[in-house]
Image 1 (cartoon, one colour):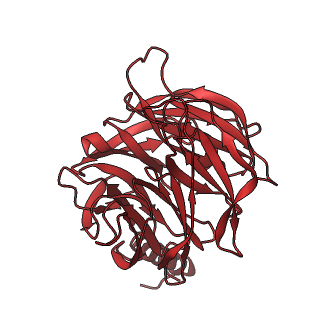
Image 2 (cartoon, rainbow, N blue to C red):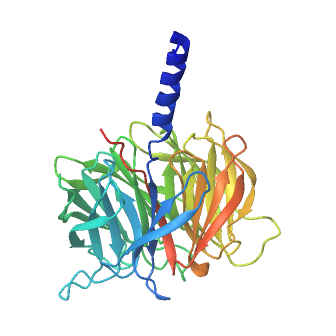
Length: 386
C-alpha cells in the first residue's frame, strides 16, 4: 500500500508521541526522620507516586539512632541529618551526618560526621548558597555553624553562639532553648528562634570570617510566654511568620530589607475558640505560590490554614483540617504545591493531603502507617539527566 504524505506525517507524529510517553517518569522520594523508640530504625526512604499520593517504603538507613531532622543541600546532591546519638565515646554530644544522595534511587551514602556541640538537637538548615550548615541545640541553647566542602563533607564547627536568658513560663522557659535557624534567601541573615527567651535572634552571616555576628538590630522580641519555635520567610522576602509553640499563635512580621530587622504586623490564633484542651504549636510552611500559610497544632491535631495578603502580608483564617494522627510535629508541602504530607509522631503515620491551589483547602488522600516515632519529612526530586 502506498502511503500518502499525510499518512507519513501522521505515522511520524504517532511514533514520536509514543516514544515520548514511553519514557519512564522520574521517581520522587520522601525521607522520614524519626526519634528513638518503639523500634524505630533510622531514616526511612519512600517512593512517592504523584498520581495517587501513595508512598512505598523502599529502604531504611540505620547509621544513627533517632535521626530526627534532615535538610537537603541546594544542589540536590547531599542530605544532612542530626541525631542525639553520641558522636563518639569521648564526646558528650550528638551527631550531624552528611550523606551523598544517589540521584537514581535516593539511596544515602555516608560522607562524614561531626559533633553537634550541644544537647537536645532540634533542627538543621543549610545556607542558600550551600556554603554553611546550621545546627540548633534546644537543651544547650546554642547555634552551631559549619562549613560545607565541595564534596558535601562537614567541617568541624566554624562558630558556636550561646544564648542566655529566660522568660515568664518557668516550666518551659527557665533557660535559652534554640529551636530552629532559618537563613534569608540571599544568605545575608540567619533568624534563630529561641523558645526559652521569647526572642528571634538575628545574625549577619560573616562569609569572610565564617562566623555569625549580631545584626544591626540583633533580635525581635516575641510576646511574653509565646515560645517562638519555627520560622518561615515569604517568597517575596518582605514578610516572615513565626509559629509560637506555647501560645498556639502565629506572629506576622515585616522584614527590613537593609538591616534584616523584624517588626510585628499581626498575631493570629491557631485554635478554635471553643477548644480548651492542652495544645502546642509545631511547624509552619508557605505554599510555593506564596498565597497560603499552614501551621500544625499538637493536641488539637490539626492544620490551621490561612490566606496571605501578598500586599501587606496579613493572614486571613480559612479553616482547620484534621491531621488524622496525633502529635503532628512536622509537615511538608511538596515542591509543586500539589500535596501536603504530615508526620504524626504518636500514631507512627504519614497522612497525605491533596492541596487545592485556588482555595488553599486540603483533601485527605491516604495514610502510610508503621513509621515508629516519625518526626520529619523531606522531599527529594532527582535532578533531570543532562
